[in-house]
Image (cartoon, rainbow over the protein chains, first blue to last red):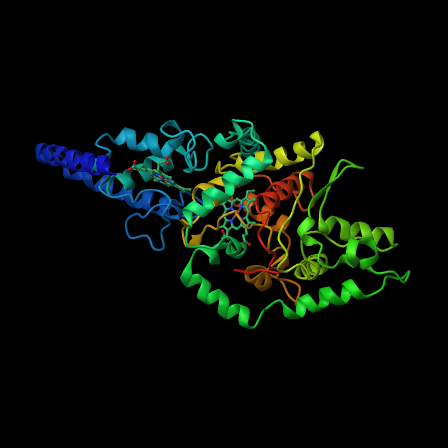
Length: 124
Length: 286
C-alpha cells in the first residue's frame, strides 16, 4: 500500500514534467483523442462489453464494484499508454491468477474496442 | 464457432493453488472453515447458513423483514401436501426414505457404495416416484424443488453431516467437485472460488458476494428473482443445481444441468465443506 502511494507521487511528478514539456501538442489531435475516449467510455460501461464497473470505480459510473483498484490518476500510474493497453488486453500477464477477465485473448471485446477503452481510461 | 473454441480452451482449466498439494478432505475442511472464520470474526459459525446476510448488517435488516411474512409459505405447503399424498399405488414418498423422509437432509448428498454413484435428495425423490410407478418431475425447480424444500425444512436446526467414506471412488467424486470449484472457466475466466472464496464480501457492481462456507445449508432456496420471472406459488423455488447453472452462465461458461454428474460432484464437495452448519431451509434470497 505504502509502495503504491509512493509510486503514485513519483509518477505524478513525472507526469507534471511531461505535461509541462508537452505544451506544443496540436489541439486537433487532442480533440480526436477526446472523441475516441468518449466512445471508449461507452464500451467500458456497457455490461455486455467491458463492464469494467463490475469491479472498478471509474469516472462518473454509478454503483461500481470494489474488486479492482479505483481507476484514477491513470497517466501517473501508467506513463506509458501501451503498458495500460497491455494490462487491459490481458491482466494475466502481470498476475496469472487475476480475477480480471482476459479481454483480448478471449475475444470478449475487439482489438479496436480495447484501443478506445485504453484512450478513455488513460484520460481518467 | 470462434466462441465455442474459446469456451473449450478456457475449460481446459487453470487450477489454483489449493489443488496443487494433495490434502485430505478433512484437512481441506479445516482450512476452508478457518479462512472464513478469520475473515469474518464477528460472524458466529452457525450464522454462515445465511449467505450474504451473515456478513452484511444492512442487507440483513431487509432480509429479516422479508422473513416476517415468508414468501415461500404457500409453496412450502404445496410441497408438504405432495410429500404426504399417496401415489396411485397407495404408498407415499416417506416409504422410500429412512425415518419416513423426515429430518434426513443433513446426510445428503452421500456416496452409494453399491452403485458407485452420488445420491442427492432431489435424485432420490424422482427415483422414489419411478419405483412407485409415477412419472419423474422436472429437476431444478417447480414441484420437485418444493418437495425437497419441505423435506429439508424438517431438518432445520440439524447440522450438515456429509461423509466421504474411505473408498477411492468417493474421493474421486469429491476431487471432481473440488476441481470444479477452484478451476477458472468460461469466456470471463472465473472460478467459483474467485467470487465466493477470494473475493467473498466484495461487490461485483451492486452484488455482494457471499462466502461459500454454509452453502447448501439452506437449499432449495426461494428466490425473489425467480419468483418475479415465473408465475404461481412455486416459481421462486430452485435447487442448488439451478444456482450452479446460473453462476456458470454468468461467466459465459458451459452449464451442466441439474443432476448432471458434474453438479452432483460439486454439491458433494461444497456440502462437505459446510459440515457442522445447521440447516435452515428454504432460505429466502434475492
